[in-house]
View 1 (cartoon, one colour):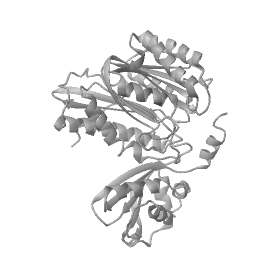
View 2 (spheres, rainbow, N blue to C red):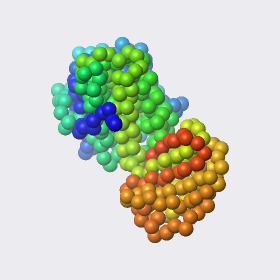
View 3 (tube, rainbow, N blue to C red):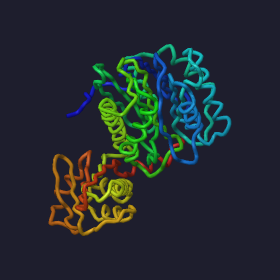
View 4 (tube, one colour):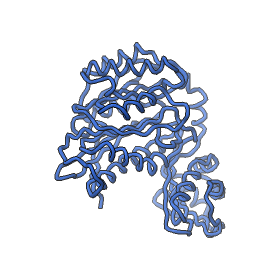
Length: 410
């Protein structure tokens, strides 16, 4: 039985959170490209960031404020220009953005996180950023529509906005959690992924908030890949303002487990939406590894299959080239017996075995093509070697992926 209830909404679902977006003209001429999220009360904060050695200026800013500031209360996001590889000028943009938002919201600059996404290497026009913040503060709102506006305003090559929200009970109080994220290309997380945000009115200690986030990211955002490129800007930020009025969670126990279950749903839902909306994608691919000898090996194999360009291309062509799956498993860095492996396809409400004991079954190619034509395809990989499981998510590889990235800057 689930200890949470899925509801409509996103970043403004939790009590006390407001959001908005605007067209600042940072790179795009005809769409919203800045978002602002604000909490009426100071928030406990936790985050994970890219492990890429080349870290964007906003990542450096946020790493500092999350670790050293007593609280956070707002964050500003711009789309179009990543503010990465911009040296000291890039850090000044972060500082001026936070100072402007802080002054207008009457909070410290160090209580404001900053994120950017878009083209690497371009300098951000700070005057447009400041003007965008000045336009947004008066329009902050707490409705679902306000949250959706913010989610739409952080998109780059995304084709859909991405949101999730749940409620759950802690200490007799109804707690709400919501999130928004963006991500379509340059997605191959190793610690976190692209830009994702979670807000909650839960009261919880900073230590447990960080512990839950860093553990859950390993099973959600770290298990997706679109193109094998780990971004310079990856940020996952969670803010908890305590306005639900529950007794603060300070120790691990039943309440903490309920919170973790809700967090997992929000994170996994957002991660899957990113994977399914990969640049040019026509299908979400799920690789589900069963009965592996260890959890580590299960995760390696699932992620390897999802990252295989040949497997991704085969799914796009609805081609039952299951040998590519076996090949990707073999170079995953996990030891296993190929002659124990069973492979299945799931899609369009149908499941079929295509490989048994490491060899092809007598399956119908026509049936396989129909199954692989689904908008969501699951590759079930039964290792028949133990009790460990893992699931990874990705998307097919299409002609449009190359088209999108061939002229991304223009």
